[in-house]
Image 1 (tube, rainbow, N blue to C red):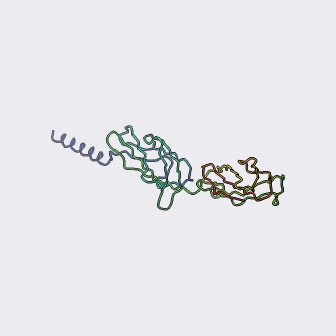
Image 2: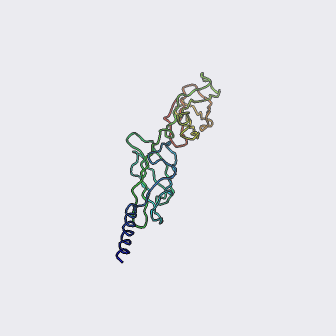
Image 3: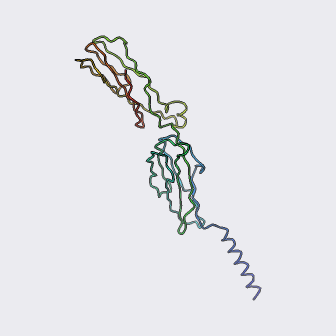
Length: 228
């Protein structure tokens, strides 16, 4: 009888030792993302997937996504922060000291996990403002009742080779807004197609005409007005 009790005690001790080695805490983890960090373009949407998170007891998990840090000026929000899969959009570029840091905590029936952190750097790509480099009028010598054609040299760094790789070759669409901001006395000149890339007007009296162009890109960022 003593021998049987001794064996039972040993078996129980081994079982307890095995249980002690296994943490009761669930583990939070991200699918397909290096938890050390991620680099994206500003304006890009990030998919967050926590379905690889585990519970040692095999039970169901609940999820909690939050930002532990945001760059200055950001209004980013995590959609459906209690879903296993969710997303957010990086709305401003980051700096060396200010980045997006996403925190994921999962919970089983009894315990929360240690937070899993994901640091995200958003490049200036996607946040560049279009720039009007110059405006050209043709002909250069204005004559009454002769149409004047206005063209512009516009640059957006988001459409350059350096940014297109991170933007997945999606170029910014540019919207033009031309205005005649100064007219000689008595003139009733009006722009034709003020939203066109090429605008024109018909001078009707002698004098100086001033044209202004503003360009807005797909993100709503607007150039400074440029005049000619």
